Length: 223
Image (cartoon, rainbow, N blue to C red; front, side, top):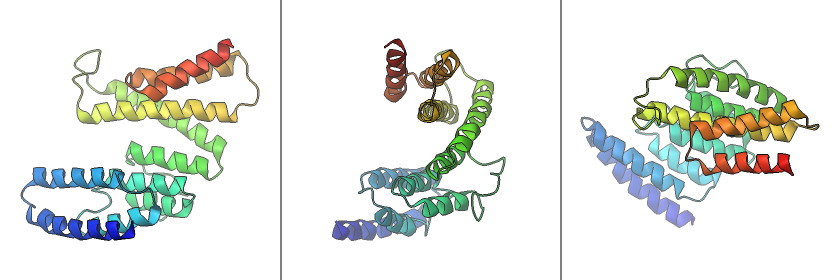
């Protein structure tokens, strides 16, 4: 597999040259970045492999310009137990030395969400859940203030649609974390969990995971 990776990196070096030549063609550059993202998703989920590929691409695209790929890399590091690498990656995206300090107000919500998942993975679970609740409230306000042409949200801008999708994932995660931390169940805690899953379906009605979690939690309550 390492040979395949080297061949891919050589091919991308040629694409990097092409990318540099397209400084006056942003649409062409966007297409190349989209191709790189699709190709990266097809790579083996290995930290070293992804890091080598991303380092090559960073010669023309900075991490802040390629935020989505680097956030995915941080997520891969977190799932692989490489928490220090994940933290360093996210911190670099916001210009900090670490994530110990409070995140700047202008931090993109995708990075905030990734940072909270890292906090949970590091063991600070109750703090992560508390901050996720606050974050979801702020993001809900932001989404509710965004203009929408109709009630079905079909004419929203890509940015607003992306925020709704992210908010659905956040509420889905909130419900999962609530269930993981809950030792004793009562009417209030059950309602709180169900509300989280319901809001996940509300903000992304096409999410299978959201509907599955909401249905499963209702079934468990009944049974």
